[in-house]
Image (cartoon, rainbow, N blue to C red; front, side):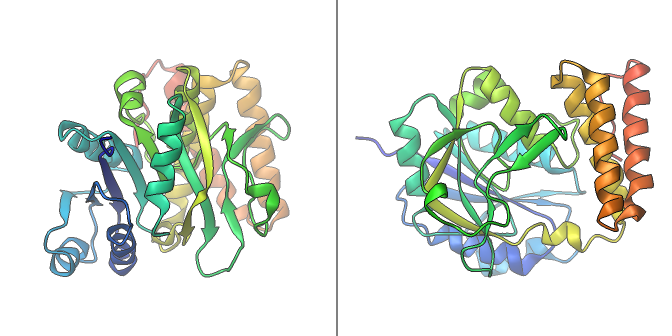
Amino acid sequence: MKVPFVYVVILGWNCKEDTAECVTSALDMDYPAFRTLVVDNGSTDGAPEYLKKRFPTLEMIENEENLGMARAFNIAIKYALRRGTDYILLLNNDTVLDISLLGELVEAAEAEPQAGVLMPKIYYHGEGSRLWSTGARKRSFPPGIVFIGLNKNDGPSYARQRRIDYAPACGLLIRRQVFEEVGLFDPGYFFYYEDWDFSERVRRAGYSILYVPQAKMWHKVSLGTLKKPQPAKWWRIHGRSSVRFHLKFSRTKYLFITLHTFWFVLREIIQGNAKVVPAYLAGVGEALRSHLAGESTLSSD
């Protein structure tokens, strides 16, 4: 039987040593048929040169600027599809992979053809058995999408393979046919919600999203964005992305946006993080004005 061919795509933005650790863990996987591609999203720390020196045969795409997650992933996805890949494994550069991760994901995908997207069990890096995510679900109230297993210790309740509503894009195996039928990531998202949007479209197209606990990875949790020089910009983008998502998929759009925004603001104030609220609200306002003005896309700058 032919072994499915996989492109492993790593999205990098600065943090070159962490990208190198991710690449090393990918190259060490025991799956027999894959290639590794790094798409560098306008790094300013010399990451492309560093990686080329460390990994001379590594395939790489270098974007001149930070295009955001959706657009950068789309460039790499098109590259991999043109080269005949059967699956694409999308990764953030702040992840480390178990040696059997890819084999476990592909085995689960081949056993369940309707599984269009598959995600591993994701732990916090360097924190033992503490979980970061085993998928996500929609919460009616307070409205939002929440991680399953966040900050919990691993145990029997997270050991069962199951279908989930949403999967975070830091580690996803996606079937080729899904991209051909559903399309790529929505480039209107610069950062945040691009994975929830894609998950929603995948399920609406009739595919399932599968959590595969035998596949394991570790996440350093957005090292690049935690070191960002302009935090207000990221909170503004967060606000805009949330509105874009709810305008596309929520039945009672404006009610849901109002409730979600109110809950977000209240939560941040209670948690002592009120300084992010003005930027977030500015993003919400920008997105709503763009929508009401009839703009079909939301700018990412």
